[in-house]
Amino acid sequence: MTTHVTVIGLGAMGSTMAETFLKAGHQVTVWNRTPGKAGALVALGAHEASSPAEAGELLVISQLDYQAMYDSLGDVDLRGKVLVNLSSDAPSVLREASDWVAARGGVLVTGGIMVPPPGIGRPGAYTFYSGPAEVVTRHTETLKAISDVTYVGADPGLAMVFYQSQLFMFWSGLTAYMYASALAQSAGVAPSQLLPFAQETFGGIAGEGPMGFLKYLTAEFEERSYPGEANSLHMQAVGMGHVVHAFEEAGIDATLPVALKRLFERADAEGRGAEGLGTVIESIKKP
Image 1 (cartoon, rainbow, N blue to C red):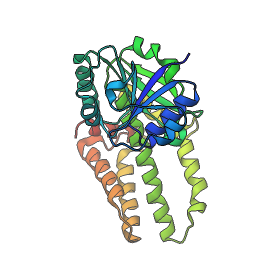
Image 2: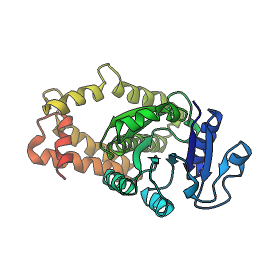
Image 3: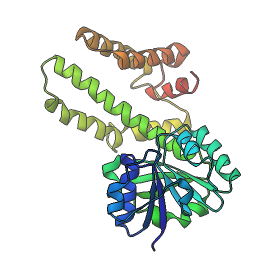
């Protein structure tokens, strides 16, 4: 089914989404706050709006943050329009934005897209969506052109809770690999020599084997029970001290290792040392 989609924001992400909607056979209107970015899309068949007021019923927004939406659409009549905002911001900001759109007669669907621009429309791409279920369902077939649709609930902030959680794991995991590679290189080890062991570690953590800590920790989080007989938090805190020493000895920045050491030591000092590593989540919840 052909749908009229208006894409607001023509950065790398928005431009790729607009092109993907066009390739899927949809009628596409585009608008960007800074003129001059729509030429390639117009050549592919898109219509460049002179203002966001020309937008159709379905608006897909890809901007820096939600303030950009206010700046772009503050004077636009939103009655009868569905805004699918894929911009990043805090969950509370998304909830406030939902009320802002509703007060102007529209409906906001919030989203967090889990791939970079080259992944748009490709297998494995997915987006967290939250907001009114019936509205998401109504536009699912259209939105599937850019990624799989993963609906997480009516609360407008939920899409960003899932998105920011995933993004933090992504950034911190890759940064940990940067630190590990820097330490290895300080001893003359090539990154390619470390790679297979890093792959084994990351894969094992997410897997079902003896290193499958994601599964183990999830069960502990839900039960709020953290057995530490075989591997106590106190042991991990001492071990993190050794890790920090290794980085400092190599003359490498130790910002992240030191922060992790301090977190472990704080949980230990709170009396959690005899429990397992998972007990650190209780300290995280109470900064």
